[in-house]
Length: 138
Image 1 (cartoon, rainbow, N blue to C red):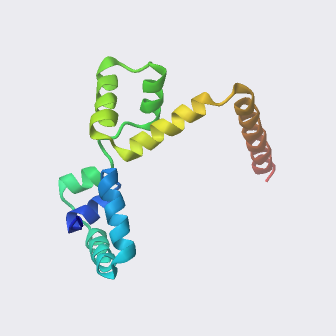
Image 2: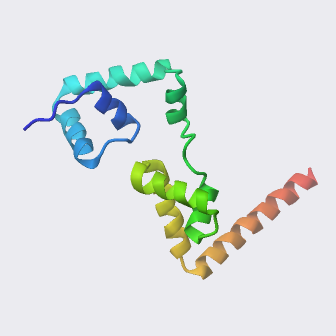
Image 3: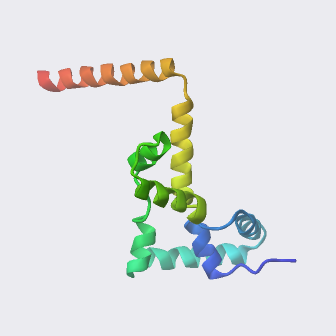
């Protein structure tokens, strides 16, 4: 059974908001069908013209997403219960792909052994100090 690819599906595809089965179907359809690729280009151009509704701006700017610092606090168990509840809802119910990726990245960084992290931080600080000295000398 072939899934009909709609303009809305293509908009969701561009916004990384498709469930995996639909994502796979859209990508397969784009590989196999030049008309779907043309339709995707039309949808992209329509988006680029700028939808200026409050909902479009909210989605485009990810205004409901927690910040990376808030996600970090959540992972450390150091945020207030209201924020913790919202982040759990945002990640587990909404399934925001951007925040899920940020969470996964933060978890991976937290799992790194301490010594390489310490060496990397020292290298960054040392290079920053050298740049600051160059700046002060001019």
